[in-house]
Image (cartoon, rainbow, N blue to C red; front, side, top):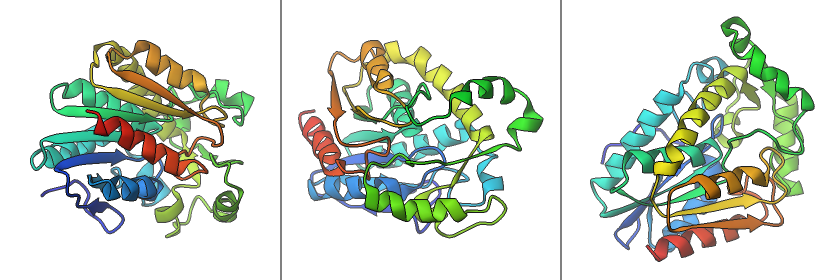
Length: 278
C-alpha cells in the first residue's frame, strides 16, 4: 500500500472489519492529535491511517511554504490508497482537516462512505481570539507581510483539559520561531504563520461553494465552548451541506482540540456509532 509522506510520525493501524478510516489533522498540527481517536476506531475493527500533512512536522520556514492544493493532493493520495484495499472508506478530519473531509466527499461522492466533520473551522470567531484578528484580512493580502508574520499560539491552546494544557503551554511559551524542536512532532507548531492562515482562507472559500453539492452522510462534532471557532461553524456546515443523512453532536466539556481534550472518548464513540450505521 503506497501512502503519501510515509514517515515515522505517520500511523497505520490494521483493522479486521474490512473498512477503513482516513484521519486528517489540522493545519500546523500533527498526526499525534488524531492518534487517540485512531486507536479507538481501530479497536472497533477499522483500519486507520493518518499521515503528516505536506511540509508539516518540520521547520517553520518549511511550514510556511505549504499550499492548500498540496494538502488536498496528499489527502487524495492517501484516500485512494485506502480505497484500493477497502470497499468502504470513511474520512474524519479536525479543524481544516474537517473541511478537507468535505472537499474529498465532494470530489469522490460515490467512493467516500461517510465523513466525520470535527470542529470545522470556517470562521475564526472563538471566544479566546484577539479582536484585532479583523486586520489580518488586510495584511495577508500583502505577500511580504504574509510570509513574515507568525502568530504565537495562545492560551488556552484549544484545550479545556488543564493537565494536558500545562504540558503544551511549557513548550509553546519557550518556543523560538527560528529554532526547530522535536516537540513539534508531538504538540504541533507553536506558531501559526500568517501564510498558513491565508491558505486556509482560500481553501475555506472553495469548500463553502462545494457544500451544497456534498451528499455523503456526515456527522458534525463541535464543542459548545470552542475557543477558536464558535458553534456557528458547525451549524453553518449542518445547514448548508447537501447530505440528507447528517447530524450535529455538541460537546459540553471541551474546547477546540476535541480529539485530545476531555471528551475525546465520546468523540471516538460518536464517530464509530455513525460509521457503523453506514
